[in-house]
Image (cartoon, rainbow, N blue to C red):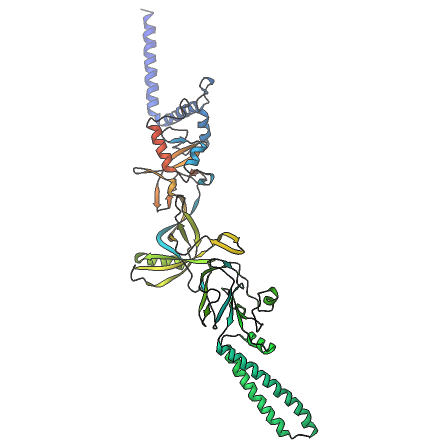
Length: 503
């Protein structure tokens, strides 16, 4: 009995202590419970991130450490369902070159409308018609069709047969001769008149005759200009006292039109060859970097031609226009883009290759009327051209231009500007149901990351900056659809090329 009392007392003391502690803990649980749970979770996380033992070193724990430094909360570590490893060959197969794997950055996105377009010539600038101002016979053709010629290059030599021109030159030379005789006689009479041997009336009559000849010479000089001769050519006839019988026609300059583009030979009997010495005596032609293409050659050697007849057509493809066709509902937006000076992008489709995009093109002008048949407003964009091939064959030069009139394309015209946006090509997106995904590079893996697409068009997509991606994250800008299919095949039970090396 004496031994049982202390045992019962101890039992009741323990129960009382438990009740007291439980009551105190219940009343103060909001103070100690959150701290305790945080300690428990921290201990568990530390245990999970600890390096594996040697017996499990064949696992891939190192991959978890690789991604622990840059954890966005949803893709720490590799998951078979959302992570894909590609060999170098596989990356090249889907176009993942070094240029196609790049970091995300914030940039200005311009919401655009896509309109059809075609490359066209610049009216009054691309084509230059070379015509003869006088009637004659073609004696030499120095250029061939399709050849590239520099401004100032000799194109044709023509023997003049225009009767009026020949007669006008003859009369001009005759008057010059009569004027020289009259001037010599006046000089003689002036000396004689001073001595008093001849009356001054005789000298006065000679001076009147000289004035008449000078007036006639002036009229004949104007007649030669009317036939197409320049002042320098008329002066040459006057200085050399020879008829000009051959016409040399040279390639004109697009930006300057000097008299040297059409030259008459000095030899009155037979044509002279084009030499550096003869060229140096003429007025120089303004140099031009880009050559002209002899597009159409309309005459041949021995052909008789009339004044004003076209000899050839030269084309300058150094700069062209893109003719866009905006629909009526887009006219206001197009005008707004033109007023703000926004540049447009030209997109050329290339068979079997990625589309070629030419950015930063300037809108030249908008048409002032809507086309009745197509109900579209035409507008024009400047397109600087470039030479892709320059070669010489058989002594002639041939060049090929990158852009040609008649090429079809699309124009991307900005209509609204959004600053600080994540912009990716549409090929960087994979879609499954309502979800969009991009693939972020994570070591030698690509992790699938769900994103929200705010806007997309035919070529680009705007990704919401909501924490799914951060500036600096490296993503694949191509091949997202193929990687999505590879993930589905992988999770669907297909053969795993890394069997025995599970992640």
